[in-house]
Image (cartoon, rainbow, N blue to C red; front, top):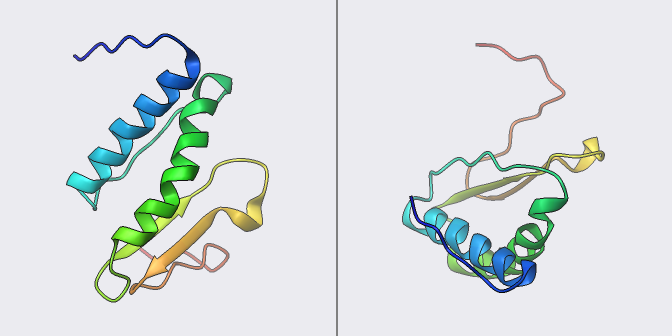
Length: 95
């Protein structure tokens, strides 16, 4: 386990976002489940800023990127970028 100490919550958020972004860069197929609540706000703000950088890095003709949002807005839960179309979650699920 790695323990990183930072002087304030803003720096903690930046570092946590950096760790997450690096993990995604190393493994583009990575699926993350991240916590909710006010503790994570700093990291999420930094991830929003890094989102722009991520969209600049990936190749939409070869890669597929989906961003899933949890929260109160059901119409804005999935953003899809790239070659593979996003699933329609309103349709029937056939397994």
